[in-house]
Image (cartoon, rainbow, N blue to C red):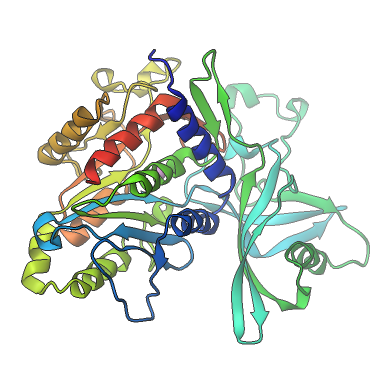
Length: 434
Ligand code: CO
């Protein structure tokens, strides 16, 4: 294995810090915004007129959980087109219901909904907590406040093996309605659990409980990210799918230096539930931003169509690394290894947006960066997942490639991947932002 350069180690440490600070899609957008602000990007509001200039650095937020950032290139947009990288801010997991607390049989539990497709068994016996956003009454109406308890607060204890004798033969199966509510506290007689829970939120946010209107709250694992392996060549954390891609794309944009082409990073919420929302990749967000950007730069409809045709979109989402304990799960000729480079994902049925042309282009970006590249195809007898790639490509008509770094345990609350791959991906993406 190649030696891990200190710069690559640092990039991966920064990734783990980014994830640890971002336990919900709203926090992901907030962390992204902080990094953009620190590098001189300015926010454009969708409800106000824009004034975009060549060389300018901007970002737009929709719904608090999707963000598009761009650097306007020095060359004409019509000629160069956009250099876009897309990823998603959401991760599968457990979300609190609107009336979550429920006291019965001596304990208060929180009712949850399953968001997307998590491996539910991995949520058991973890030091879980809550993070998300709470809508608070203000003089002008209401505002969303970010919430993150920085300590373990709730838990999903396993049933002891003495009462679940076949668990190792049959696997841990959890009934979604009955067996997922999270343990929060002892129930106290004559004390209303809903009021107590609101009090807990209010105390943390330093507001009055009566000012809480509603919330969107995720369950997250408080264990910080870590390195493992003899050379510390692997990483483990929650949400590597897809915050590793968000971080790689954002880092590539932040280190881009006065690019000729207009470079854009689009991070969308709701990928794990199909992307069909106002803020999702299936909504109008990205096309609205491109249209307004084009008009601001003086492109007419004809010039805008040229810009679209000259654009290139990299849809970045994680890939399934070869796991030697499960050889039957993989296509034998398309095993992709951790720490062996970014993966181009191909699917003839267009579950991935990759074509031969766009794959060739990404392969050459990797060659220019001196980075190895791998090819993935799912088993023919297994349905494969999809990404924002085909959605954005079909909405916009932009040539697109689906790529991602190899990882293990996708959709577990504790996923793992390779240190080298993160550096490779940033290097390859940076070749597009020139
Ligand atoms: Co994903």
